[in-house]
Length: 344
Image 1: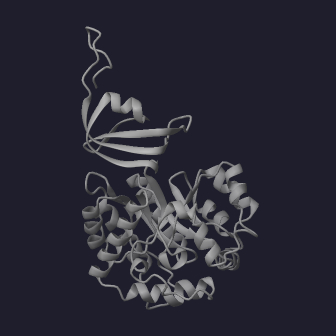
Image 2: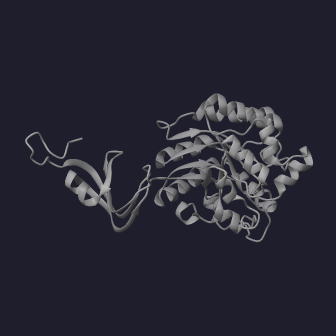
Image 3: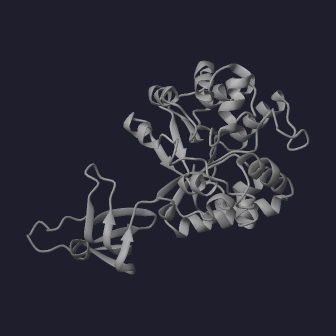
């Protein structure tokens, strides 16, 4: 990078850049989390080369093009920690608003996903990715409800977004004919995701270990998923305890709440993201903090589907205990959009 003055003390010529993004406010991720008023971002090729006051960057760089303006806010690319990129982007508003969690998921959404073709899923994923990019999200963690992963990955590479994806895996489905898999088949499906999509498009898209979660996995599957994630150095995510259904099921089966049981199985670690975790108790919050597991909180879903997050949820307690709480938008039939700015 050229210095501000050459060896003779004269002002250096401005360096060429491809794009200068102007903004009334630039939100940074530096150690002080500075917000720069009347700021700008200098871009050359696919790299950000400088962030600072607009006047300073204009003195240092000559841009081939400009974007933004005084009323814009420039933010770092956001990460959507939980989103269903197939199925729901093409059927927004399909699920009734006045049904409970179990009927919503297993009575409406699972049958909907079962009807989709590979082309449907590809288009759905591209639509979701485009909506995320348009609203400032540049990376996402997919929720594990993809059936035709090869087609979805190809579609995502075309769009250019960064993400971690998985396919639909469980071995205790609530309905026998919906995505039937036994434990060995489920484990093989997880392994296939890592083998086929370990790193795609220079690592922009990659497979991760994902289970549907809730009470749809046997203990052997939980353990195997944990081992695969560790061996591959991949993330591990699943749904847990949005509603009382999961705690009731685990207490009836094991005499333990879900997060207590998963901790005893050795599932939880710093590479794990549990989605929802609305119906948890203080002991479970402490386990999350001790294991370093993250929680993907979907606030708009929790409110719309009436999980009780404002009455019994423990998001403030989690954050006070040091749990990393990220934000996700979930499915379009739950939150109605994929815009993280609206979700927060």
